[in-house]
Length: 170
Image (cartoon, rainbow, N blue to C red; front, side, top):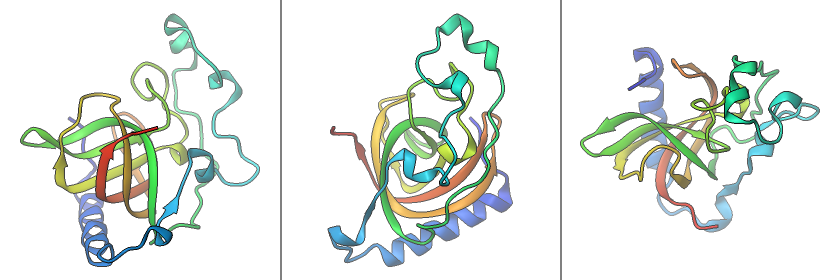
């Protein structure tokens, strides 16, 4: 189990409280639908060429480090967004996940090197989410912002205080 340091943790709980106050009465048109490519600053690619496409499992070690990120986008700071991805659980409360990394593809950070920080989102939720396990596909709705966070797995560029986490329905 990996968790952010206590100072950052307070920030996320504060963000969670703010999200709880502002999320009531939201209309569908108030929610920004994000895709992973939206999180990458203009002119930057989401993944370096050596990580684009499929990487055979035995070659994953060739690119062992997290690629550098040249920045994050602030367009959606303080906005309610919806983003789909895959779960890497970080903290649990009982049988539910209360903090997890949302990643753009299966295997990120575990079987292959992590993507750049601007392709990772730290999600916190007050209501534990009953996850189907590692890399469960989900759609998360909540308050979004930039937040530089470091875990044992990767550097993370964004934070999302979840009001709602549901299984992904393509």
